[in-house]
Image (cartoon, rainbow, N blue to C red; front, side, top):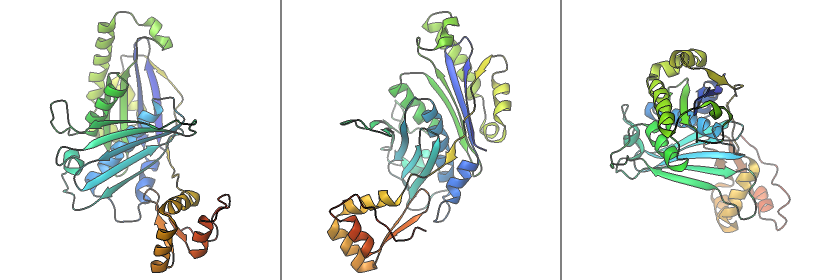
Length: 316
């Protein structure tokens, strides 16, 4: 079962969390209707799913965290979306061949113009409220192409939250996993009352724990259970543990949302598709469901009274 564990280092200004996506990650891949993603894309999407889950659990936010990687390469866009209850979905648009040994720059940053966007989309928006989005390049400070997803996201968190962060990610076809360690701000956490010293001392504590975290290998992160990992890394530290959470796969697509998309196309475009194909078929890239609308359904969509939902057609 997929699991996420959050913890604090007692008396130190450091918090952490670790996630292992198992059944949730395998269902993401099983839902894909087209041919399976190439292995390097699977690895990238798994790391995005793990990272998105960690980042969502790290904030108090009632809405969706949407991570998008886009640029130039065979992967035109990759998306991981995690809701506040840790339900998640993942997809990617791949065009062209992917080399078996391709890394992040080869997939989405061939010409150095790749970007990572993190969007926080509130579940219930107040009037005039917009989703918040932060964007960082897939290049390092010196312009070099970053080779790992963790480097990109550490940069994002330092820039957006202004907190030192260490992130380790790994994924294969069965498990997507990650561990995140972050230095807490000087105020605002109860256990910080025990933390002595100035900023230099706090940084020293964080750097020591970050170094321990970075020693975790890809194989260990994928193969070992949470308890074993925490014991091996932090056996000299006292951890304050919280109740684990259970991430899961879930898709937010619906017939009503698809109807809204068709309404956005306009009546003329919808009629043109119906004349050519007899029905409008829209497939969800995340879960594989296909929504079909015939001429009667389309007419209902464009009725002046919009409080009557479309009915009758099948969902496959």
